[in-house]
Amino acid sequence: METIEINDEFSFPPENVWSLLTDHGKYATYAPLKESSLVKEGKIDRNGLGAQRKLVTDKIIFLEDITHFEPFLRFDYLIVDCSVPMKHYGGIIRFEKVERGTKIHWTSSYDMLGDTSPALLRAIKSSSTKMFKEILSGVKRELVKN
Image 1 (cartoon, rainbow, N blue to C red):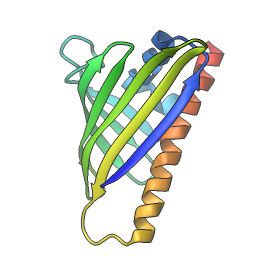
Image 2 (image 1 turned 135 degrees about the vertical axis):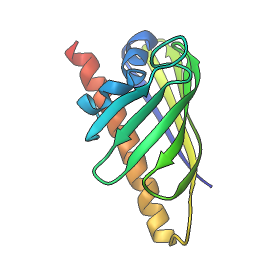
Image 3 (image 1 turned 90 degrees about the vertical axis):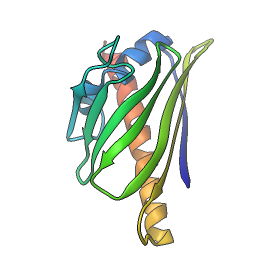
Image 4 (image 1 turned 90 degrees about the horizontal axis):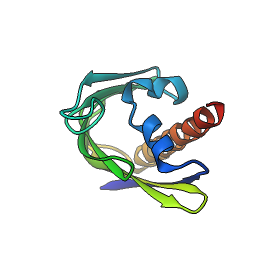
């Protein structure tokens, strides 16, 4: 199993960071994605528990379910369909209020299916890590703009 872990800090309160990271339909406006959309609204909050989002990169299409939703603290997601063969065990994004703003802890665990070389596994993990970091950088840029 491969696990990606990203930690980052924002000089904005958790509520501000939360509002961007949970607005699934707007990811493509600041993240390295060709498309992002809310496929299905959540039960209580449109972007919350039970919501389903679609994220499209240059090469991969992800369909993800929001499986846990605690406003300003944490949300979890699970890739339920992907255009590359993989088994996703879940992603967790935790928000921690700190003196200077918000600390983000993002983890995602998965296995690639089929015969995958170690070099390809490293490349996939590296590109996924880079994408997560670029998403968080995009959030920072959006927060500064507003």
